[in-house]
Image (cartoon, rainbow, N blue to C red; front, side, top):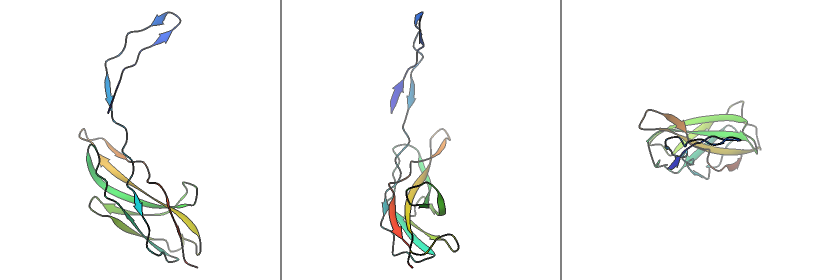
Amino acid sequence: TYSIKVRAVNSVGNGAASDAVSVTPIAAGPSTCPASTPTQHRILVCWSQLTPAQGQLMRYRAYVFTVGTFSRVVSCKGTSSDTSCTMLGFGKLSANTLYDIRVRARVRMSRGQVFWTEYSTPEQVTTQP
């Protein structure tokens, strides 16, 4: 958590500092684990449980992206206690294609604020021919 104050500075001089505001950075995303052997139409994704420094974990979402981009191909959802989900990509996943898998978590803060964590580091998988 950081404490931030703001003050204006211009050619006349420095203004008075504002009251301090506490800011907590967004949590990092959960880490992914290697996906099971994907088929042409299905990818099982798993992740490590995330324990947020603040707030309550609500759910997870896993995504398949075109490799090297944030262009979503398909996704699946997991509850706060899940550590895996299966992505079904009939008509969306291509055979013998490399994809990036990323996971992120939804967290509710004590004041009712809800946010997504950052995406996990991508895991790459190749669908079967």
